[in-house]
Amino acid sequence: MNERRYRLNGQTCADAGPPERRLLDILREDHALTAAKPGCGIGRCGACTVLVDGLPVNACLVMAYRLDGREIVTAEVASGWPEMAIVRAALIAENAFQCGYCAPGITFALAALLRRAPESDDGAIRAALVGHLCRCTGYTAILRAAARVFAGP
Image 1 (tube, rainbow, N blue to C red):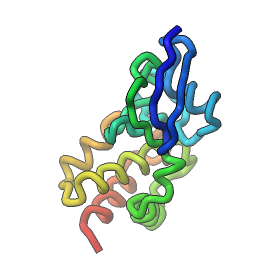
Image 2: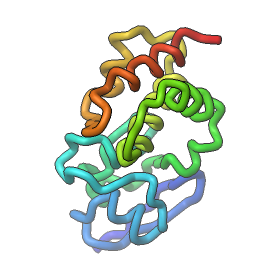
Image 3: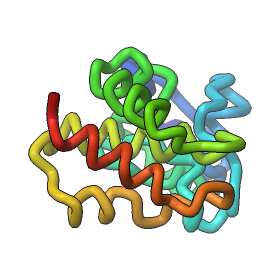
């Protein structure tokens, strides 16, 4: 097996495990990073969202062989971003979640969008949320919160 080197939350890491191992499992089992949640396992729910080279991806779909040279950021580190605080405040104000299982993925996706494109419109917001499932709320409060975030102060 070939060793893969990558940066995880600013730290250089190496992995020599099976190339077909999922990033989600590496994060949770090897690094005790649990904000990326196991959900559907096929990239449809968004519960396992992380950033790879600055873009949101489903960690359940990224295999270990694709990690070499990549920069990975998880919600644990992003929790210190000012954008995360802004998004969280809006989601709380709109009472956007019930059970909260989807919250890290949705919050992280919106914060990454705010960081990357703070002038985003409704279309960009909805595109950022594609693939994020919330089985409790029906999305109305989540979309209201997102509109609040991108409307500015």
